Amino acid sequence: MVYQLEWKTDEGKDWLAAPLAVGNVQAADSTDVFGDEELYWLQVLARVWHEHYARNILRGTYYDGKEVLRNISGSIPESMSKQAECPVDWPRKAVSSLADKSVLAGFNVDPNIDDPGVADLADRVGLIPMMGQAITSAYKHSCSFLTVYPDAETGDVQIVARAADWSAAVWDRRRNRIRCALTVTENNRLGCATAMTLWLPGRAWELTSDGTGWSAVCTWRDQECPVVPVVPIAYDRQLDRPFGRSRISRTLMALTDMGFRTMTEMDTAAAFYAAPRVWFLGLDPEAFQGSKWSRLMTSLNAVSRDEDGLVPQIQQLQQASMAPYSSMLETIAMMVSSATDIPAEALGIRLSNPTSVEAINAAEQRLSRIAERQNREFTGQLMQLMRIGVYMQGGYSRLSDVDLSGITPVWEPVNVSSDAAKADWLTKVGSVDEAVAKSDVGRRHLGLSEAEIKSVKAWESKQRAQANYDAIRQSINQPETSQTTPSTVDSDVSGTQQQQ
Image (cartoon, rainbow, N blue to C red; front, side, top):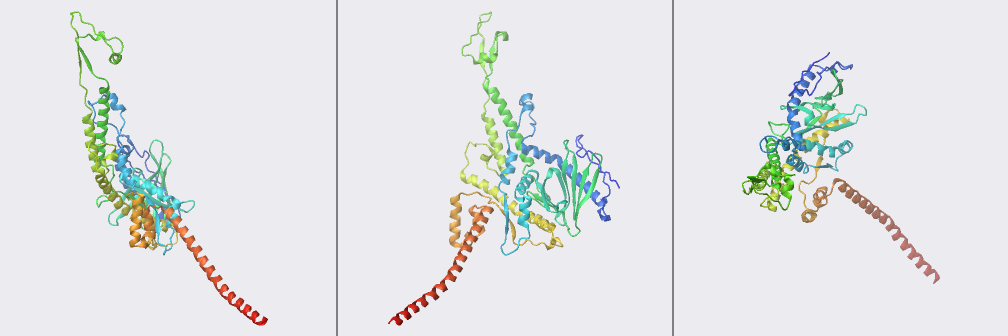
């Protein structure tokens, strides 16, 4: 059985050059056949991926600072326009400034429950650094994806992050979750996909291309898993945008273009400003011998009279001022600050009227509130991810049997405060509630990392064990002393009496 899948082209570029040729999966169970349902969703996902691919690549271009200078004809020389490189990195700052406030520190496990393997799974797959990359990619493209699957060779559960520019998903609005997903896992040097994974509820298909067609193999199947093992990490999810939106919005891209043009025009004006424009009225151009630039740089120059005895007039044109460009950059920076909630000083612009500390803190507070909201959203997505991962590790008959109550992700503090402020907070809280100050919550507010908290708890446990050991040893030695002393006295007394 062979299926043909038609791919659309964009400006003569065929992102998937070869048609899809899928044969039957060699399996005893007839349900493992790549059927019409799989082909239908593959066609839908391929269309979704193709429709969003260009915009994802564009946002990646702005993030990397590789955008092309546009709408600049007539303002600067064409040679400078072709060689100009973007000198502003506002899109990258819009992403990194918020991503730096969403840092996963680990998982907090209630000591009264048994960890079903969440912490071990997170450590084994490197979830903490992977989550940072997924969050950065989500802020760049609006979303990223974390896929969960058992390794075909070892059987260990693997978690891999996928970027949106090489992924596609369809949202199930009735169940409020992903209906199906497609991730491109390999591509050749020309950018064409050579391997993909089709994710459906309870099954996953690996599709590979040999240059002439596609073949599919079912690598995972579990009828008791009703969900797709793909979890979205999205920024600013809305009811009409379940996969969120990008921090690199259309407004920010337009403002970046304005800043790019302004900086390029300023550079051009500076070149003209460095070389003053001088006009000699009534002088033959052939009178200039050698380089004109050397004439300008020479301290003493002489111009003879013409044949009529007239002296040529020299006029120097007034140079263009750089102040309008600085003012325009300041205005653009304020608009970028308003669109991204980043202080204008962090955008590389020194404002004419310096912003007060209160205003800077207020701007940081707006960004911090967004980060706190995103961390709460990421917490739910992480728990869904770990629930699927724990289920795939085995020991559960159904996904609904996995209970992760008492396990919560821990995020680094959003606002960075001084050590003195942290110590003052801990002292005041400890005077009111000593238990909070001595708990992991208080230690996290103090700025200790999860590894440091574990080290402190291990030291406390060792100290308690040593104290218990000393108490037991003392309680054992105490009765021996009390029994030995009276017997000695009695013997002495009796001995004395006998001598008498």
